Length: 315
Ligand code: PEP
Ligand code: MG
Image (cartoon, rainbow, N blue to C red; front, side):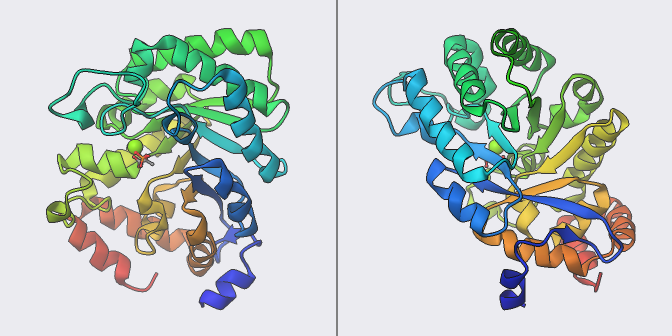
């Protein structure tokens, strides 16, 4: 199968009953973009822009940021780029911005929270992204949105800059990786153009299980029915407003999770570049109708292990 998957990597991922899932790449630095496109990526579903900030001894100037993003765009050849604004803070500190030590960095000033304390940081980044995009398809999303005020802060800043720059094809969305964002997805869906579900953090925060703690690996499984319920709520809320939903956490590359996620109605999945051919091949084996039945049963299951047994039955 691996060889066949590689041979067909440039073909779309369409289920046996004709449903097409978009498959994008998660990138941690600009240099991976070309490799991802050669591996069959249909775009970049998550650009972790931390790379443009963390490898420097001071805040990179706008021109430097523009060049890094242009580097990614040039490899994409017109395919869409979903750029996540800086997700630093917490366990990913910026060496040039000293902050008080936090007892619980995963629950601390990270992601959009950090940008609210340093608005010029987000402003420069948004200007750099829009300038780099020109007329190429750009989607921008904010990480760690937990509360409406955080979304509004980011959206108001974006609207102001976009009115200035007028980049033609830009959508503004948000990560859904905190349970409160999934629970309030109906509100967010009225304004956000799309959601991208970060299952790594969503699982960690739903089950109160540190994503890096090996002892808790079995507990922090994104196929837990509680996490699936939050995903289902997010998809329903988005689709009710005509918006699209992707999954950009590790769960999207898990062969047992894919049919469940498809059945829950996701429109796109974004995975690490080397997983793309296999993810596409897996989608081609599945029927959306059966995936929907599976998802319905998974939501009623008692635990992640039970969902994995259901998903292990031939789909
Ligand atoms: C996630 O939380 O699932 C995610 C994609 O973001 P990161 O892994 O960068 O926190
Ligand atoms: Mg995350």
